[in-house]
Image 1 (cartoon, rainbow, N blue to C red):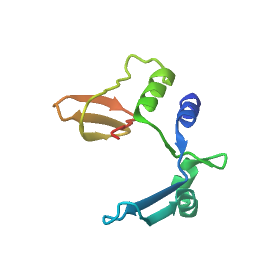
Image 2 (image 1 turned 180 degrees about the horizontal axis):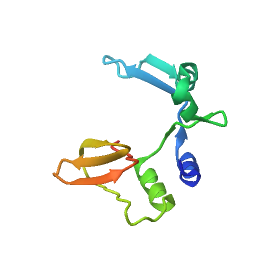
Image 3 (image 1 turned 90 degrees about the vertical axis):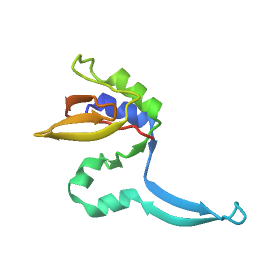
Image 4 (image 1 turned 135 degrees about the horizontal axis):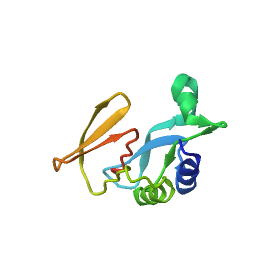
Length: 124
């Protein structure tokens, strides 16, 4: 991963160490109860293997939540300006196909693009 892009995403994002789920009472709409609470960092550390090796850099877990517009801006500003690089906005992805390290995107409007070695989906 390009270290400039990685640091820009880290600066623009929010670290995600835990995931929680809660619900509100249908009756009063105010009282909440916890559905689940996961320590994501612990789960990946305990799992070991490649996931742990890839997600932790210098002891820090590389899992960040980031707003779509912020990510788009960061990628446009920090990725190398390469005329072969394609960025598609306002498209609905219907499929990804490929092999040998290359992927092709298929969109609901019938268009296709690629090959890519990285696809980032920001669908909210």
